[in-house]
Amino acid sequence: MAFSILSIFSSPFIFPLKTPKPFKPQKHRTITCCSQEPKRPSKNPQRPTSRNRKRTPYGTSRRSILKKTFTQEQVKFTAGVSADPHVGIIGGGMAGLICALNLEKRGVKSTVFDTGMHGLGGRMGTRVIDPQQLIFDHAAQLFTVSDSRFAELVEYWLEKGLVRQWQGLVGLLELGGQFVPLPSSAPRFIGVKGMRPLADSLLSETSMVNVVRPCWISKLEPFNGMWHLSENGRPRGKFDAIVIAHNGKCANRLLALSGLPLIARQMKRLELSSIWALLAAFEDPLPIGDGKVTFEGAFVKGVDSVSWMANNSMKLLGSHSNGPHCWTFFSTAAYGKRNKVPQENIPTATADKVKTSMLEGVEAALGLPKESLQRPFYARVQLWGAALPTNSPGIPCIFDPYGRAGICGDWLLGSNLESAALSGMALANHIADYFQSGGACPEEFAVGLEKEFQPIQGHDIGQFPGVESLTHDNQMPAYQVAT
Ligand SMILES: Cc1cc2nc3c(=O)[nH]c(=O)nc-3n(C[C@H](O)[C@H](O)[C@H](O)COP(=O)(O)OP(=O)(O)OC[C@H]3O[C@@H](n4cnc5c(N)ncnc54)[C@H](O)[C@@H]3O)c2cc1C
Image (cartoon, rainbow, N blue to C red; front, side, top):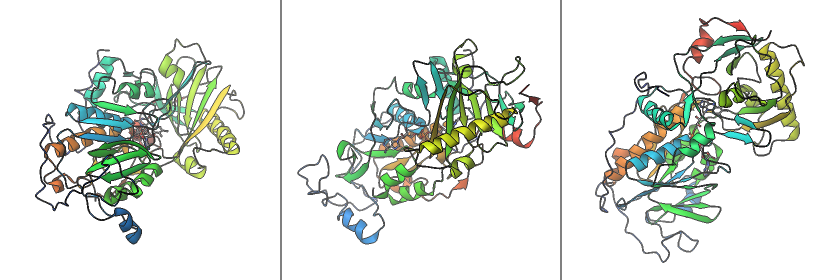
């Protein structure tokens, strides 16, 4: 597609990072600006065991200190930075993947660990049900671009045919069926085959990134100047630095006993919404529009159980698709909060209740008579228990140079894919700069460890240019969708 997005966007984000320089490995150095513990010999330097755990390079047994104080002692790596550093990235969503990509650009190798059974991407999920030809983007629906660095990346994805502009009609749907189109000034993009395939393609041209999936990193242990990662007791490698590229309960648990109290504290400040997703396939088109104008996506206003609806068949397969009509519906965050259950183990009664009330919400949003909406022949609910951040420190990344650990993720800048990508980029450059410095003056590389959080404004499913103006100041012509 002959479409250039680079020229039209300028950056709204403050990005206090240095211009990327190619990574020049340095020889091991003795740190002079902080005291260094003597390195102790170990019979098995590969991984910590119960016998050798006490002999850590940063002094006394961390375990005993944890027991005594109930607070974590800060890990301080004092040995010089390796000449050929390797970064362990825990989380293969947009932020972790872009971090790996940018570390490679700076000559630093990495391994990405992700829990995904079916693919990478985290909240860039696409569900395909083969025999029935059903397809649903079941978290991120679309993305917008406002920063020139993200625009450059998206331009490349456009050239590679990984993404395209979503030309379908998207707007604001008010309870009762009044629809206002979103202004077309902010182009919307989608993965050509859905969001998950986009995520799976992001690292396809890398040579210094290793991906391990499905893998759930359950423990981080500092030992002999390296981070040792393991999955339920199974060693998963040792790394010069680690990146936490996920959030929520899982990250809090992982960081609780890691020796990274500053990082753990920042992560614990994060607040996340919960959102229900209903994936529903219908035999016939939903009764929207007069046959001439039919929307493909709508932010919904005034309905408790529905905040977004999108026709995936139209979005991903186009008007040529003559198969079933696959819709993704999201609840509001308020509804998600009130109806929260363990997301891995949703009681059948809750699933049925949520399905029913979300379909009733769709009916109300479209202004259809009660019980007139056709029954979907396929319907499945899913809870995003850690859906979207509701507060943020508003900085691109967090890095603890003493513990050689960083955090990236959407929540550091906002609540959308662009924020996640910018955060991954920022952390990669910051870590590469740190390695390049040889680790001699760690204090210069501490970022975001004390930053206060502010509430995030935006729609329940993230921040999208144009949506707020529609909500507050309806200037666009509205029309009734149900006839
Ligand atoms: C319902 C919903 C709708 C959304 N709609 C949009 C939208 O339309 N547009 C938009 O721009 N944004 C949208 N978003 C937000 C967008 O999806 C996120 O901002 C973005 O995907 C976050 O990327 P991330 O890399 O920060 O985190 P994630 O995508 O959450 O990635 C973290 C990854 O880490 C993995 N992980 C967690 N713990 C471990 C562990 N211990 N070991 C290994 N791996 C681990 C997880 O499985 C996951 O794959 C939506 C989000 C939701 C929930």
